[in-house]
Amino acid sequence: MNNGPDTVTLPVPRTAPGRGTVQPEDIYEPPLAVEAPSDAAIVVHFTGKDDRTAMFSFEGLPLPELHEDLARAFAARFGKNQLNTVASAYGQWNVIQRLVRFLGALPRPPRSLSRLTGAQLKRYRMHVQAGMNDLTLFAHFKLVHALLRKVPADRLRPEVLDAIWQAARIDKRKIRSKPGYDDATFHKIVTAARSSVVDIYQRIREGERLLARFEGDPTQLTGVELDRGVELSEIARTGRIPHVPGARGNWRSTNLPDPAARLRTARQLFLTHDDIVPLVVFGVAVTGRNAETIKELPVEHRLLDGQAVALEIVKRRRGADRWFEEVTWDVGRQSERLKTAGGYYLFCERLARRGRQFSRSALIWSVWTNGKMNGKDATSGHKNPFDIRLSFTSTLTGWVKTQPELCDLPDFVLDLNRLKTTLDRVNTRAAGGHLPSSIRSNTQDVLFRNYLAGDPDVQDWAEDVITEALEDTEDAARTAYRRTRKATGELKVLTGPVDEARDVATAGIGLDADTAREVLDGERDTPFAACTKTTDDCRDSFLTCFACRNAVATASHLPAQLALLDELAALWEGTDRGTWWRRFGQAWLAINEDILPRFTPQERAAAEAAKPADRVLPLLDGPSEEDTAWV
Image (cartoon, rainbow, N blue to C red; front, side, top):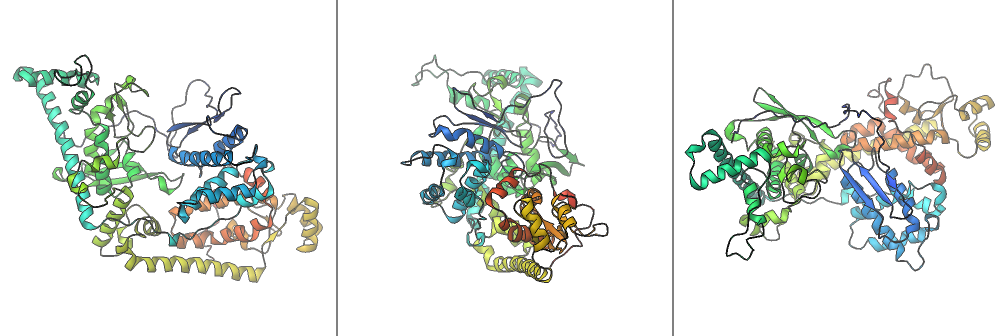
C-alpha cells in the first residue's frame, strides 16, 4: 500500500458560492417542489444547498384539508437563511407531523387553517412542553411560527397572526451546553480511536501488499496466498465482491451465500460502514473540527511543497452564505501522519481511494456495502456513506461497545460535540489560559457560547469576562440608541391607508403637502426609508437613516427592512458581538422597537411575503460603514 501523499482530483462537479456548474444542453425544468395529485398524497421534494435531496409525503397524516397549505408553506421555507440542508428540512417536517397529529386528535379539529385558533396553538404548546427544556421548546415553536408565517395572512385568524409574529426571546446564557470530558476520559477516547484506525490501516495494507505481490510476480505465491491474490486482482479490477458460500457443517446451507464472509473479503481492500465511525471520531480529535466538517472532506486538494495540504472545507454553522472555507493543514513527517490535520486528511484520502474509483464520490469517503438497492448495484456496492444524510449508518454506541476501555467507563456516552469541546479546552489550556489564543475555527464569542460555556474548567476564568464584555457592548448600544432618540425624537413612521398616512404626514410630523406626497409616492426613497431633505450631500451609510430626523419609514419600506433583519441575524453568528452592535445595533433596535410595533400583524405578514429575493446589505456599499459608530 502506497502511503505517500498523492494528489487526486476526481472530475465530479460541485457548486459553491462564485462557482458555476456544467449547464445541460437542453432546457432544464426543475421538479416541482410540491406535487398535489388528486388521487394520491401530497409530496414535497427538497434539494439542499449541498445537493442532497429528500422527499416528504403527507400520506397517513390526519386532516387532509390542511395538507396542501402546509406543504406549500413548507416548500416556501426552502432556500437562503432558512432550510438549506436535509437535516434542517427533516427538523421542520417532524414539527409538521407532530402538529398535524395533535390537531387531528382534538375533539373539534380545524378543517382548514382559517379555523385554527390561538387557543389550539396554546393547547399544542402545553402538549409538547413536557420533557422539553426552555431552549428545545423555543426552537420547536420557532419552527412552528416560521412555517405558519409562510401561509397567506388572509387564511389565518388575527389571534394566530398575533401569536406567530410575536418576538419570542430566550436567555441562552441560562442554558448551558454539555461540558467536555475529563482528561482521562478524553485520553481513552482518542487512544481507542487511534487503535481502531491503525487496525483499519494494517488490514487494508496487508490486502494491498498481497495484491501487489500477485500483480508483480504471481509465481512467487502458492496455495492459499495464490488463491487470495487471484481473487483480490479480480476485485481490484471490477470492484465486485464475489458471493461466498456458507461453510459445510454450519447452520447455513451450503447453497446460500454467507454475507459475513463476503464482508470480510471486501474489507481486505475497501472501507466499510463500521470503519467510518472511528475514522471520524479520530478526525475530530486531530483536526479540532466539527464532525459534520470531517464527514464532508472533499477529494479535491492541493499539496504545497509536500509540507501542507490546501483544501476547501464545509462549516455549516456559519450561515448559508459562508459554508465554505479554504484551509491549509500541516502534513508533518511521515511518522506523524496521524498527529497532524494534513497527515490525517491524506491518510484517509488514500485509504478510500480504491473504493472511490467505483463510487465516484466527491468526498474522500467511500465504503462497500452489501445489497443492490438505492443504486448500489450500478457501483457494485460502493457508495459515499454520506450521500443522502450526514448521520452515521453504524452508530457511535456500536463502536463504543467494541472498545473495552470505553465500555468500562460508568455511564459513558460518546458525544462528538463534547469531544470537540474537550479539545477546545485542551488547546485553550495549552495556549496559556488565554481564550483568544485557542481559537482555531470560530470567533471568540461563538467558541465560548457554543462549545466552552458549559465546561466547568472554563467557566471559572472565562464566563464572567466574556459575558460582561458582551453585556457592556449591548448596553452601550442601547444607551446610545436611547440618547439619539431623545435628541432627535422617535423615528417617523407612517402606517395605514395612503389618505390617512398623508394626513399624519402633514399634521402629525409637520411635512408640507408636496413633501408628504413625494414620500408616500416613493419619490424620496432610500433603501430603507424616505428622506425629507436632499440626499446629495449625505455621505453617511444608509443605516444611519434609522437615527436621522429627516427619515420617514412607510409600509413600502417594510419588506426591505424585514430582509435587512434576516441578514443581520445571519451575520450574528459569524461576527464579533462588539463589532455587530457597533455597526448594526442602531438599525436593529430601530426596526424592532420603533417600526414593527407600529404595523398590524396583517401588514407585517404582507411585507414578509414581499421581501426582496436579493440581498439588501450590498446596498450599503459606498459610504464607509466602519466609520459609522454609534457606541
